[in-house]
Length: 347
Ligand code: ADP
Ligand code: MG
Image: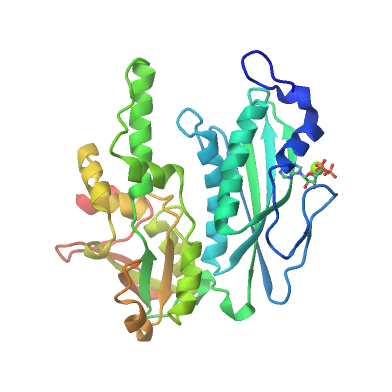
């Protein structure tokens, strides 16, 4: 309706309320507890008995994402996914989200629709309703702030602080792949900046690119834990890398840890590309980040319930605090596990 001749609709032509109206027309509510969504001064939620779990995350252009290689639809998906991942890490089911947007005039209505379509796809996939947000203009770039609301029974909640000596340290999925996806995108961006006529060499790397651009929160694990009759003693989602996030659990629980190189779950595609880039694949797994897998601890007595599960790898065990944070390489040499400064492992 306000579209100009190059198929671009300026946000200024719609105004704030026009834009909100436009966003809300794509939004459907599925959660029975979402009593009032977009359109009043606030949303109204009935979460029933149990505990409400709330988290929020900001994504700022130039700091957290680079639109030169991150498509807006993927960005919207990822913005929701990383918040739902935090809910999973508490063992809470996603229910609602709120979305704050600040947009510069560089963004058109069509761009906002792309972004929102990614957000709504993630909402749909993981059963969360978009029930509100805020929209404002920005002097430069795009910022996205997502708040996610989840639900759990009191006895289902899992904190970082529950790990005990001798607990098993477990991770879901594989590690380091999102980091290698990022390396790939960075390389192609450098090539493009040097010569815009060169086509990007991204074919054959779908898995690693998806892991970086479209992470999936492990909502599926909540149901699995229930059906396996296991409850983690402590849990966190891996956003900064196994080493750093495991240390968060250890600090909160007042314990130490031992992690084994040979146990790290690394996909062969991650391994191959890391070697091509001259990166140690173990370092990508330990310090790469953005995998959004779950890292959790379990009492040793639960070993039989998870030892044969393909989705889970046991990477080590919890020790007493005074044993520190240890990393055992394939030659059985012991190193200090570090959140950074990983070069030391190989020297
Ligand atoms: P107020 O001025 O009272 O804060 P707004 O005009 O900001 O209200 O918002 C009107 C409605 O639109 C509210 O329900 C709000 O939650 C919703 N809303 C605003 N921006 C967004 C957005 N980006 N995504 C989803 N809902 C939004
Ligand atoms: Mg407002």
